[in-house]
Length: 311
Image (cartoon, rainbow, N blue to C red; front, side, top):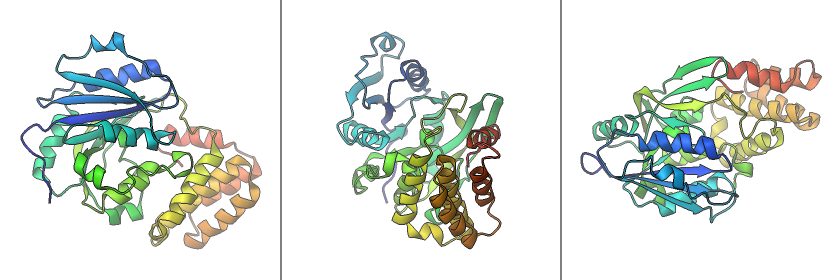
């Protein structure tokens, strides 16, 4: 079993970005403001967009923080960009941060301290504060999450911007982040399912990541992409359907996405699958309501987002 070496192991923060200059700068400033005594490197991967030299930002970062930029040289999209960043990272540990999120100053210190207590963990996560248009909602994941837990639930409190990995574990993972998932939807769930074959996820019981839901998501309104990505995951990981509650959740999400996209045939097929697994699954009924067009999918998503939830 690998362990975290030393009191403050080196960390590379991998930030994939696509045309969000101001949000990116906010994210990078939060990473540079870490109260962490170990070496810190930031690798920004520009996906399907020109490299921004970030010259104006470099003077704002502490001199001991290394900032490097590069283009995504893998498949276009978040998965390829993250794999590019992983391949460029030089540190013992690798963290992800979405370019529209932020870290609090003590994130890395708290996570590496927990890893010394839980060396069997394959991932260290933490709580998140979700900023919506109506306020802030705090979410904390379970102290320990196993692959068996993930097969029963996505555990939505586990957010990619909170993930910290050993570099050696990521390099040993076949294919890294799966670039074959349609449109990259659900790639973080797939990634956790595979990484946790090497050990559980331990989480710091504090909110150290700020997740911004006060703006449109990349997938907002792209219902076909959501449906194709989720149905791909169900086919790739058939054991996701072993638990009736999780099977109902995932099939219900696909049903809702197809209903929102206006594909009535596929929506009805997935709604039937949902009800077979779990007759009282709320997402099946949301899908049927969406098919009637009595309520728009945008209204449903907005209502759930106000509570810090998704479909």
